[in-house]
Image (cartoon, rainbow, N blue to C red):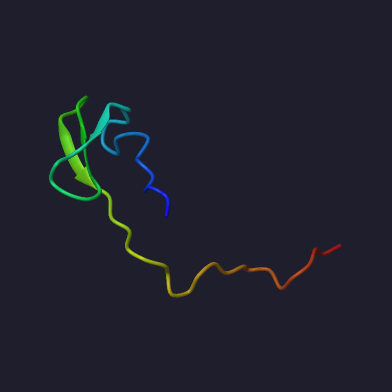
Length: 59
């Protein structure tokens, strides 16, 4: 199994100065804006991806 992906930037200030936080799994801290946040996977959507087209290209 592969490792989890790390965030590329802070969702608050946009800086890339991120480090894992000792709070727990998925917790990160931004040393640029001094904020801590946690990422959490909620699950798949029940409807999934749907298309509005009937199929094929119209000419």
